[in-house]
Length: 81
Image: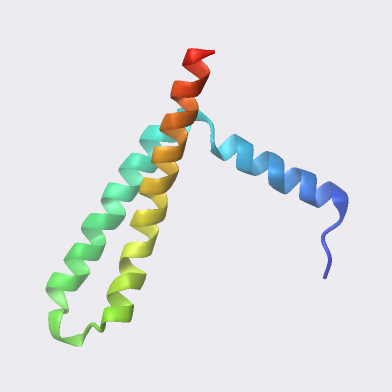
């Protein structure tokens, strides 16, 4: 199913809203919580986890830390202008 032009514009606009500096602390807190939960899962079920499953546990934390990093740079760029 192809996306219509209107839905593509809304999707791109949603990405720019998500890159707003006001979400920096939300991304940072979410990434830290995701990292702690992943570490807890690995400690509790140590023998039953494969390497692939461990990577899947850490992907949300990595993505949220990346978003916090990108938002932080957007915030600094706006302050310089």
